[in-house]
Image 1 (cartoon, rainbow, N blue to C red):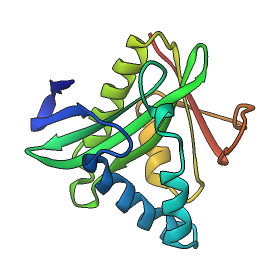
Image 2 (cartoon, rainbow, N blue to C red):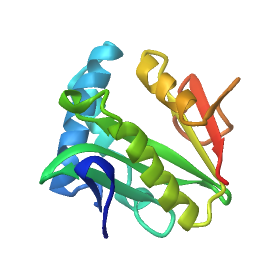
Image 3 (cartoon, rainbow, N blue to C red):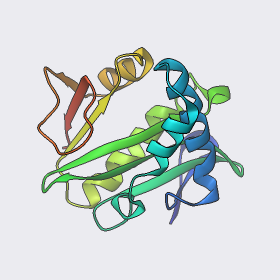
Image 4 (cartoon, rainbow, N blue to C red):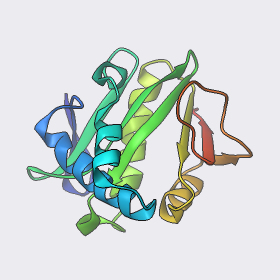
Length: 164
């Protein structure tokens, strides 16, 4: 599904292993390894290790925002619980940041999340990503004192947004 949006960016639904998703995974690998003092091999395996079906319909989704044919922003969501979707892999190309693409991405993801029947959006992020924290606070997410109970990974900064 392709849907036109603002600023010439159009969003395309992709699978985790789609070649259009590779710039997202590649840049996040380097960025997370650098920010969190680990190896790109470890981060790359972790990013690519999620079962692809978690980010596919009916419970999840993944989109890439294209400017022309170039991926400039993207992200994914998966089912957290019956009412809640969890955002993952929120990314904007380093050469295209501070232009509002991440805000447009969040709007697109939230629209898809609401269309799937979820009423809340949840996410966790690391404590070395102040830009992410600022983005989420500026777009209506509120910071939780602790991550919600969950199986698997949880990072120290947790956010929640009720969808209207």
